[in-house]
Figure 1: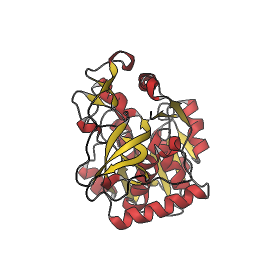
Figure 2: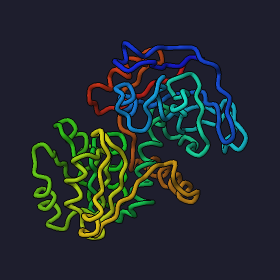
Figure 3: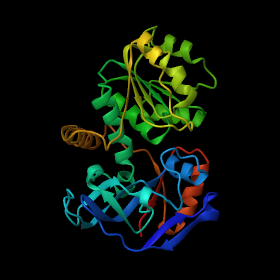
Length: 325
């Protein structure tokens, strides 16, 4: 089968090559998926730069999440051949979604909502399902509370804005450019804070009338995390999601104790069966009613995958999707 991979670090247009690799066989609780579309994003860019904290090895296989058709199901896989699913791809062993076929574990797979196109469905799991785990299952965000989303213009950040509003929260988002600010407002943010231009503590204090924020959804990490937790309310909850800055947020136990808040993390692969079932039901309903909607996408043909990866060097608001063969 055909697969796009890089055997060295560098610019996508120079190092990413289309190669032929053996058709993979699924193992226990896995399936071979005929890829319809895969989402590319910051992790793929970081892998090419050699800065991805999760895995640093060659060759690089791209596309961590996919929508596709179950081609062959291994023992114990939850769906049958022919089903259209969204799920993770085993990029870490060279079988990512930027290929004709990939291997997808059953633990991360769900049936693709019929209301979503392939281009929309490719990003749904790692955006809205991650946001649901973080905001609902871990932070227990309540209607009337204030949610601060660090990195509101990113994929899961924008999903958190939309979901936060659907849950009845007041949403503040951070963004560092005018277009990103406008994008966050379009996703539903009540207020957008530019940390490069506005004082963080003073702005949050003024907007919340001194009450602080109840939940922080952190996709950025680094110094922004440290600034944000200074504005958290008593009993607040911080959800660690990602490290767009290049480093994770660094929780300080003494600060946590003094301010009286909690810190947790969220992944769509780490949840109970009850949480998983409920999230599918709720999110599918929110899609059907139009209360949440995947943001616009830039769609590339399979043969133009290096161009799609190269586009990640410039910060953009549209999601980058590559269709299958």
